[in-house]
Length: 119
Length: 111
Image (cartoon, rainbow over all chains, first blue to last red; front, side):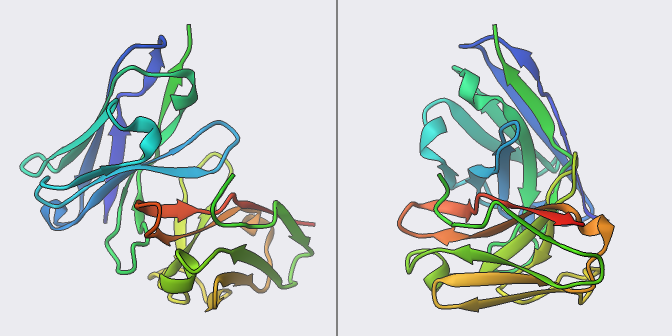
């Protein structure tokens, strides 16, 4: 069974930093692109970042470029999101996701971790 | 404001059928596969449909997907109260260099 379990969320002040983690199991982690998606309170889904199987390619939504860094450790089957210079508008539930089927569909999701940026 | 346009809400009675539309453009839906997601209250999204009309293992055939031109549609038959959820469409937008763009979501109410 595929499992994605996020951790690391919490309350942080504007300008602060946070590192999210996602522990993956039940599939060959090193064979797949991995993604982060967020959902602000009461809002829709927004893709944040993705990373290639070997970590050689990373992409970000414009609003987080230069502030967030996605990374992975295939030996630990884990995905990370380092978030710096956090803003109030970054407040959201952050989901780790994987596309294990074709067509760019996100077939597996974690349960999410809440990040609240507030003073 | 989302690139993909969905109605904010739809409703129908138990046992009935409902459709949810997702409208885009040639740079997104028009030239890429569409996927659909169900998000029950307080839970993570769940994939219902991928590659326009395919169902992952475990998704009942009450859920169906279709695409025509720059629009896609999710159909749900035999509505159940447990289907009350938010539904999102998603696809790739090559012009925005975004892995997946999502619609704004549609709240389904089963009356």
